[in-house]
Length: 325
Length: 265
Image (cartoon, rainbow over all chains, first blue to last red):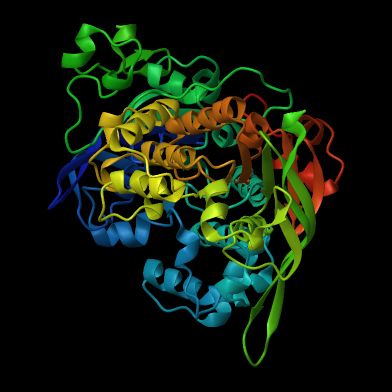
């Protein structure tokens, strides 16, 4: 029997609307995350990665509007279910989101355990006793390799890496099936970065979470943790495949450019020169017609300028480019 | 050999930050640091956050005074220069190019100010010629940026423009404090290549401050690894990366994610 994927996103669109016009930040994204899989979402800043995470979560920041499409998490349609059910049944229990810079959202004048009390009462609808929370969260923290006494500390007493690990621990209190992490290591140095990655891999190994969507712009980091990978450019997914395929045998010209401009450390000295992609990412208020990458593409053809390329499926790989039609 | 000439010298540099009036706390940010920068050399200052990298940069830029120790530029103490002479020789680029520009003025003003600092009142057409040739050097087209405001340019373009500015001034030392961390991944390589070319062609010395080992490997001739305000290792790049001596450097190198190899568990 084929189990349905844990997360299904079908043709999702979300636009920012305001005095500046309409920004098509996520424009027709389809993505699957299977059970037990860690999928990476790569792309440079401003391509809509974080917007996609917000849209999946269902609680939209100001100015972001859901347009159309479907997000189904473990059988629950995010935009077709009663918000009350979402709040108590889906969020944190089936899907958790660790937003970008979430470690800065810890209240500086309250202990970590206080935040956990808030989270528990929000998700279960009752105010738990302090002992209950300390016991439950303490056990969970120990399972994740954190010290119990972290619960009694204030956020300024923790280092950046510890804060991030505490936030991840709080968001996995109910062992959600899907964990969405948005740039968890962007403000950390490499040693704490490695600890976070270790923690995320352990989470899956100990079956605390089943699947993960890992959002990052750091391709070498993606290589360390993800099984599958989707590359986003200007609000659309341009290529999906396994991480190995994406890195060693990229199909889309943008992915190729991104990989060849990636500055990665390797144990052998490297002589070759890095290449950067010419031009700049498009303004999503007025994206170029046809393929959104065509003004920067070296292999641009006539058809690219007028018609949008379809998403071509090649045995578990998808690429959106006229080169492969 | 000309390129072996020591250009900047830091001797026994120490900086203590003092905070609080009643319960005074002392933070030793930089502790007895010795190093020198030769002409036409790229030195990378690597270390985790809080290891004192930026404090060193600020001291070299004369933004803060060292608690102890001396910095010599071309054999003279940096505090014996007057402002104009000093900043003709030493310039900096920072993480966020947008915050380095006044958003209310067009970017032309940045370049005009650079000509003011040169102090050799050139005729207008000569200035125009220099702007054209330097912007070609940094890979920009003058039409792309002249008459525009900072927000109309991309981070990569603006950072290039700021590098062009240091070229117009004719500085010999560039302090680059994490110059690529706010720039899109696809444009980042362009900035690094530019610095590499300038080093070769213009005998430019660069003090490159970063926590990114990959960029260090790509760019630097020598690496200084710092930890808690102290230098733990200082050697040519290939040597540090291939045969690290200090345990901290080893740990640092083991934690860097690689593109073609996976971490062992």
